[in-house]
Amino acid sequence: MSRPRVVIAGAGFAGLTCARGLKGAPVDVLLVDRNNYHLFTPLLYQVASSVLDPGEIARPVRQLIRPLRNADFLLANVTGADFEKRLLLTDHGALSYDYLVLATGSQSDYFGNASLARHAFGLKNLDEGLAVRNRILMRFEESRWTEDRERRRSLLTFAVVGGGPTGVEMAGALSELINLVLRKDYRDLDLDLVRVVLLEAAGSLLGTFAPPLRDAARMSLEKKGVEVLLKARVEDVTSGSIRLSDGHEILASTVIWTAGVRASDVGATLSLQLGKQARIQVLPTLQVPEHPDVFVIGDIAGAVDRDAPLPMLIPVAMQEGRKVAATIKDLLSGYGATNFWFKDPGIMATIGRNSAVAELGPVRLTGFLGWLMWLFVHLINVISFRSRIVVLVNWAWDYLFYDRPIRLILRAAEEPPD
Ligand SMILES: Cc1cc2nc3c(=O)[nH]c(=O)nc-3n(C[C@H](O)[C@H](O)[C@H](O)COP(=O)(O)OP(=O)(O)OC[C@H]3O[C@@H](n4cnc5c(N)ncnc54)[C@H](O)[C@@H]3O)c2cc1C
Image (cartoon, rainbow, N blue to C red; front, side, top):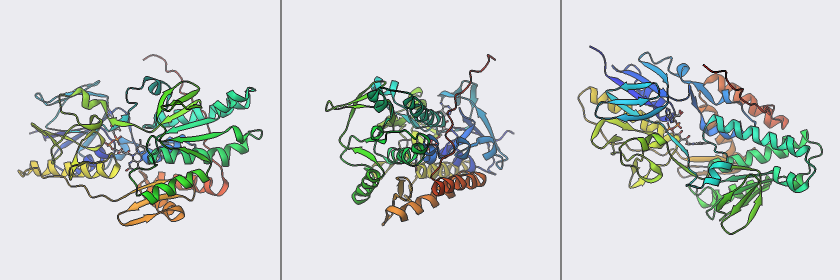
């Protein structure tokens, strides 16, 4: 008799953790992802700012599931599901399942603003991280050979929209890339023309952190030369400028958008109830109402804890993945599904060298201590031992020599037809 089949859509933090939780269980696991790699998102901004190479923050899924003898991988794009027939629909055909786990994450949300979607860079996946890196380096090359001062000002102004952890980290790293590294490459660079502007619509940065940490982050960024504009709501973006809702205009030909996020489009292809940020509404057991064989976890899941939606964060995704693996094993043993409870390990964000803020329960750290904590936590969580060594060497090189050797402008060649 064939064993029950668990199909997991998405090999991110939630999906991969769920697959690992099913190691050795009497089921066949099939992980499906449109990319053949698992991405460590917290360091994506370091790819965008030339600190790390993509291979240091991503690992092939097949390598990661090698120890799981009951798991296989399919490279495919998930397009929908037929819950009555128990099928996951992909561009590689329909996949039958006994249990389905939806874990396709989230994407940038431009809130219907067409100018933003057209001109701003997202920072959600490796391709976008590389595109940002290319753009920053290209702007410096162009500005070197541009006579017109206003045009140079626009080329050398980089706007990061969104004062959450990703925006803060990106702005800090970009300012350091320019002020510590690129200024040595471009000897004639007029630093008066260079601007890194961080725009936030709310009245403070890092709204989910305690107020003293928000202020510490802002001061630290300003010390590194980042202009922080609060209550600055972006209304329109063109190829060379940004207009704010108060009419203020900023000449900037690179805009990086980190201000909005919503659940993956997979949710919208299913006849399921969506909540805030288009996340799929789930029961406290992480099952979908009326379909007890379908689970939703990670960013795409609208799980609620004590009446508040759980944040789109890695600890939530991993804990949900672990829980669903345990529930599937319970169901196979004849037990019922139990509720998921989130244990919050804390939050942190770095503002570049020697500075970070961390809130771990009652403990609050800023400055150098916060930075050491950030380094430690991120290093041990990088996906493999080999990456840990390479990342450590790159960080040490950057720290000691004020240098980022990964400053390559790479363009994908067009592939010949199949
Ligand atoms: C730049 C950045 C920095 C971040 N920093 C932090 C941090 O420091 N700490 C923290 O806790 N959280 C951080 N986050 C949030 C964190 O990455 C997410 O909460 C977490 O990845 C959610 O896990 P997930 O498994 O739901 O989604 P993901 O890890 O995004 O995985 C989703 C997977 O689904 C795949 N997929 C999507 N659509 C399809 C489709 N149609 N077909 C097939 N496959 C599909 C994707 O390729 C991906 O592999 C950050 C996010 C970003 C973008």
